[in-house]
Length: 128
Image 1 (cartoon, rainbow, N blue to C red):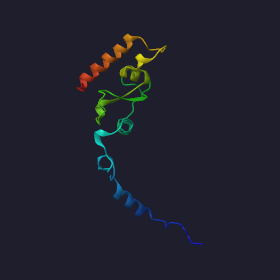
Image 2: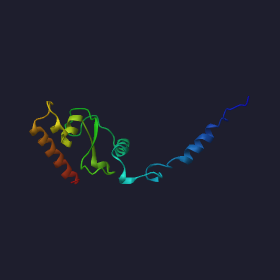
Image 3: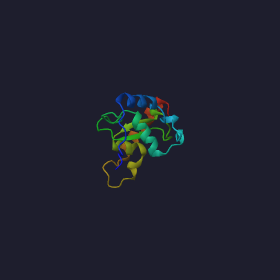
Image 4: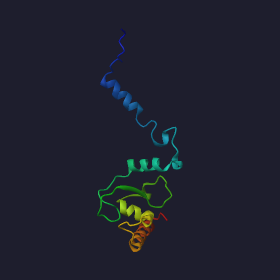
């Protein structure tokens, strides 16, 4: 029978190959890079890899941050246009909380308060 094992390479050789390949096919250097024409989930993945996740929601500072939310709704590759929110603040900022029936947070004034805070924050960061 023939020996089908690959030859072992030295650690020095492997490190040399690793160093020579660093940075190739990454981000805009990749042949399939789409820039701002990227899809929704791919853009979320790109932001998740670059925007550190805080322990608490960036709006209420009470609950743990769970969702990555877009501030302006334009879905661009700008990390200043994204923040980490808890699920209830994310739903309120998107207006999805109004669609809930028999939910805990259906009071309209609470949603309006959150939306006002978001608009105030957006004006401070000049996103709108």
